[in-house]
Amino acid sequence: MEAPTLGHRLRALYPEASGRRLKQWLTGGRVRVNGVVVRRGDVAVGREDRVKLGRPAVAFPAALRLVHEDEHLLVVDKPPGLLTIGTATERTRTAYRLVQDWVGAKGDGRIFIVHRLDRETSGLLVFARSPAVKRALQKQFHARTPERVYVARVEGAVREPEGELTSRLVEDRALRVRPARDGRRAQEAITRYRVLQRYREATLLELALVTGRRGQIRAQLATLGHPIVGDRAYGSRRDPLGRVCLHATRLGFVHPSGRRVMFESPPPPAFRRP
Image (cartoon, rainbow, N blue to C red):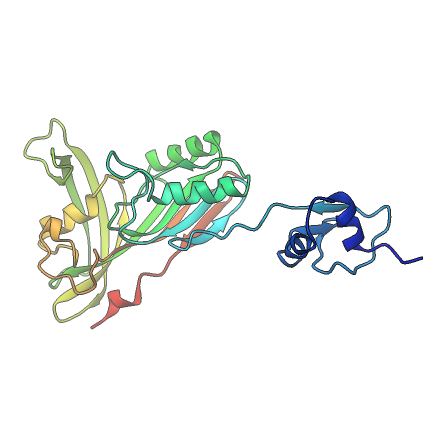
C-alpha cells in the first residue's frame, strides 16, 4: 500500500482545488505540517500530523522600507513625496494607507497613526497596532521624551559648530509655518543642531527635536538664513536632488514592553556630495 503523502492529504482536504493550485500553495510556502512550512507534496505524513493552509504571502509596499515589526508596533522608512496620512485632496496614496492595506491583507487587524512627517521629508515613522499603544506612544511624544533626530543639507555656511534654535511659530492660512508676529496663537519650537560637514556652498546638519511642531525645522532654518536645499517653499534657491534634503534618521522611545528602543535610517548618500 502506497504511503500517504502531503499531496494526498491536500487533495483530501481541498477536493475542489486543481493540481496546479496545490502546487502553487506548496511552492508559495502556504502549507505547514505541524507548524513547519513544507514545499514538497511527496513528503510522508501520518494521521497524527497537522496539515494547515496559511494565508498567501503579501509583499510589503515597494514605496516603503519595513524597519521593524512586532505585535505592538511597526516602524517604516518613508520616501520623500509621500504623505503620512490623507488630506482632502489625497486620501489613498499615503504611508498610512499603504501600510494599512498590507496589514489588512495579512489579516493582522489595523494600525494607528502616532506621529507624522511632512510629505517632503523622508525617514522613520512609527505606527501603533492598537489604540492603547497609540495613546502610550503619543503620551511620550507630548512629554518630549522620544529621541527624534534629523539630517539636513542646508544652503550656505553655518558658522557655529552647534547651537539651539528657539522660535514661536504659527501656521498661516496657506498651512505654511512661520515665525509669529505676536505670541497669542504661537507655539514654542526648539531644535538643537550640530554641524556634521561643511561644503563649498552647503552645510550638513544633525538636528534634534526638543519640541515637535509641524514644519519647525524647515521654518527655523529658513529664518536662520540657511534654508534646506530643495525647500523652495522656504526660500531655497537650488534643488540639485529634486527633493527637500531633510531626513528623519534616528527615532528612540520606550517600547510598550518597557525597554528603550532605537531605530536608525541613514540619510541618502547624495546629502553628502561635495
